Length: 140
Image (tube, one colour):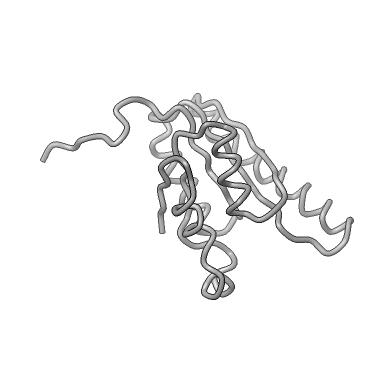
């Protein structure tokens, strides 16, 4: 069987949103497997809650540290990579950043940390699939 590539050339940029869940780690690993097909990876963590200024600052520092660790593996493969930290509703920020960055693809997990809430509100991934202006790759 002959495979027909969806993207005949290297992807210019892949937006890789993460909540650092096990599902997000799986997507990260899959993107590392196809790194030679990607020119740039934009790692994104969206913070949408926090109780106090101190807890928000602690969460920001932890997210930046984790993004930095994720960046290393892409750099080792010669891929341009950068991490972004954003605030706001996750689906809205992911879609707007994908547009601002002119992402070729958004790659994310179908499930994240907030699986129970998603049953009632509609998942972040579902909202992104419906509203994104670029292709979206969902992995389980």
